[in-house]
Length: 148
Image (cartoon, rainbow, N blue to C red):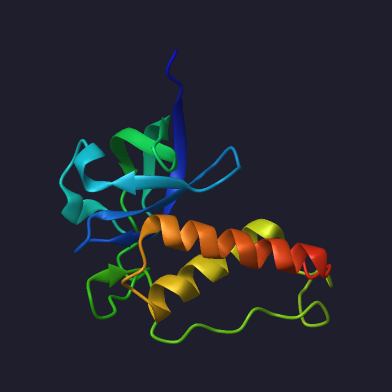
């Protein structure tokens, strides 16, 4: 049985045709590829809300039968060389626990999102598999130090 999930696009490289969507239900980010879109890829950008079916791909979770629910806000993304959308030209540092409104360290999900953005902005040639592997190692180290 296929279950349709809704989520928000957190990364999409329109040149390479892939990115990631964060399911509203939580859990790991899901790989999204242009070949699985049921709409014109020009309407896909960071912040867009999509419905999709989650499948087990060769390298992890993969979105299929992706439909657009809500387009991204017009000013929500800023292109940076190489066609990567949604990467700010300046990435602010993660706030430390003392400066966060709730006084806590970032959640694993917040850290994973920041690490993904930094990796893709800093090294846009990384593959999805490399991004997921590097992010996993970084989050594991952060967890072992109590940073998240």
